[in-house]
Image (cartoon, rainbow, N blue to C red; front, side):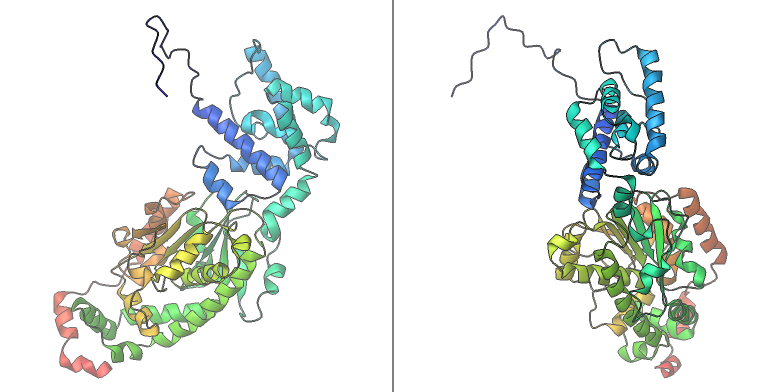
Length: 464
């Protein structure tokens, strides 16, 4: 049980200890693991993505390109082998790979996508090539047997929303919702991961996809749902914030009083009620699409604001009611902004269980429109879009400093809010462009102290 005594003449230096691998070597190994996982399981779990991304950058774009173009990958890998042999002459050791091209991901290991993809090179040719790359026989076997064909993996991985039309797939789920579609924000490239974005209110049909051009990288789609109803809600909200009635409401909020009779008389309440009903139905459809792997067996990130966040939250709530074996492998990250949903701990905990990565609640305490409308249509006074959700694993991000000083700002400031949340794949130049548009079109004056006094005169009580 006692520690051995140290020999005075023993060598206690640590100079001969093995060095930690370089970041490039770690990246190469992690991408090898990812590729083997995808080709053998023919799926890409959000848990796998969340776990492996903790160690290194995942070169998902190159892996996807190789899956779709194995012959090109094989040819490039062969060229890279010859080039590196000439430059480094091996010297009896595994040569150091530099660069990560189409066929060089994971140090050239993608040459192993055989099984019908590169039939002429199956067998001794592939084994020899892998030997040159320093990859052992076990890895060669895994890679060679992992794929029966590229169509098998790509078909399972990319799902119905690859480069195909979405109309036929959605039509099966639109019995209760007249206007439902999944639209590409940009031309799909069949990446290893996918985003689905849901707008809330709309000023026009273009707002279904326009806010989400801030994203780049992963395939990004937008859920179109009941455009006409959302346009009517938007029009009512714009009218509301410019009326003396809303100025009176804001004054009452400043005084920390709430008049139920006033709230119930506001014009957008009817449209908001309709919007909530439709949003819940759209959420049910989205839950069905997700559980049936309509977007493939790849990680999906969900992002939405306002009623769009409600659609996503309803979908997650319904998925949480299903057995964990059917749902724990579906969702990677979720970003919700200005969500008109209760900050109920039990419900959010159930939703948190579904998400392999991050669950973000973006809120704005100064969103007085949401404060009035959400509380007028729901018995709960704790609204997630206005406050912190006190649940372990939920990241609460205050967006007041991002320029969200009202509910109508979520659409134009969504990119800035995503940057604050450190969401991956956000194009800063596009965010700045959208921010400038908001500033250029801003024409709603702030409520001055004189206007507050005018709005709170007894005569305005007639609007109740």
